[in-house]
Image 1: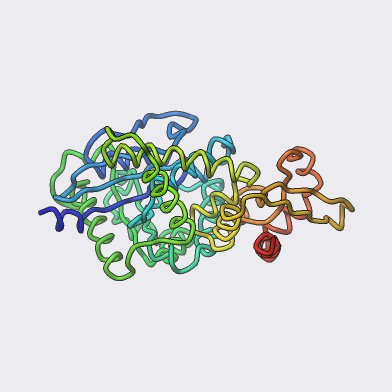
Image 2: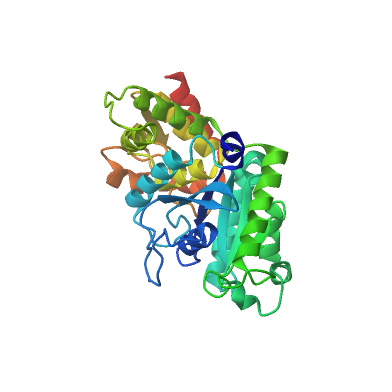
Length: 351
């Protein structure tokens, strides 16, 4: 069964906002309490974590990522964990699962939906073919189907349409004990895995240049290890930690928005990060015409934040605090346009 089992193996990446049930969804998919999950005003998923299990006769790896759409985050901590997520995702993820919850959507939550929609639109066709939406708190449907619930909100419907209409629902609390019917997590997870199978058959695995670079680095580190008493899996786990630290150091000056954009597969963000990972030492000087000053950037491309768009802007490696005020005009412009980031990438490539 070895070859067949390998063929059935699936790697699923969960992302979304803290409080919508990401970690609980991971437990529901794997049918085990492997991810910490509890009610909290702050993020429990303070770091990236992954877990494996056998579901419906196949190996499933679930990667639970930090709350990248949270309104309040420790940017450096989240950046570190997003980079860790990349090392866990390689060589490729089969599906990105966007976690949302069934319930009343307030103005703030609708703003987050707008942000997600903006990001999805910028992700490009490649990753959009590998994103599905999974709603939690299915008990709140009160007799509706998830499709009927979504139709009541034009913004939610537009978001689902952006993801090729791929939409599923579970209930991490109430639907665990039923083994059949709509209100059964077993049935709903089976449908989710079937969707992943169909999308993989139709579109293949998702990958990009950034993931390829990360995988190559992990393989290099694994091959260079002298420890003979470690299993191949132990060597790979140790190599991932080394690569995580190397990438984090190399992207020390990159703003969190760009790193999140690269994680989501947004083209220019990926190009920014890939360019910097390929360069050993980069110093870019950008003139802010309005402020009348220049900022030296020692390996830096970035953005203000994910809200309003990802990529653009420049902050200094050693002078990040000073650069923030000087670069306001650049950053605000970058929120609206990718042209600035493309220019910086071109400069870096020519060095």
